[in-house]
Length: 294
Image (cartoon, rainbow, N blue to C red; front, side, top):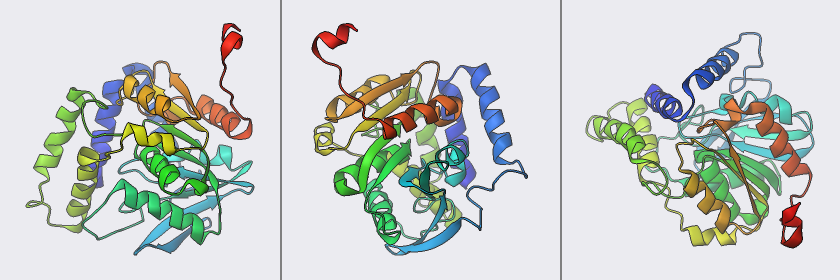
């Protein structure tokens, strides 16, 4: 049933992008994912290990050495969503990337799934790895997890870069036409019809997508780490919602990518990696007063 989540993701992606360019880049990405000669990210026995985290076994892979960098994927995703980021950042960072609870190899048979649970999972994973703090990259649901990690465990997050995150499961964040695509899938996969473990897990992920998060924009003022808020100008997340996140985080910086939708780490892979690394390495500063004319 993971294909349901993947199908929805692709529908949303292609509804948001310039069709021709994005179709080519997504095809290249999928080809790279299945390249038998490439590093098998997400299935790499040499880099992967299961950790006992808060009642389930969380699968995590680690690459490189240096300052810790935690990367968090989106709903229904997994480690191999970041095949363009892992080798780039592993040159200078200790990249920690896991399958979130109930996704990828991190199976969870519980009935409940919340973003708060997952944020706490990642804090516990860092504890298990004896890492006091890390830079964090979060894409989509991973961005939501990053926000909550910075709120609930502020000492764990040194700097935060998020793309395609949202604060609410409604039309303030996502256009009505997208909900019209997603919500019928939730209705079709009702609790009554979800019988197998795979169906129940897919239902859990769809409910997460449709019913959460519920983050008060005013609470973002609690986030004290420097934060780079990223979005595409045709993202499934409304541009004004991304701007709302940016405006409410005290040390936030905004980067909107032209001609991009929800998959900025794929469509703009080289630029994404370069700018995010620059953000981590060099302090961004707010430009004020007369300097704004320069």
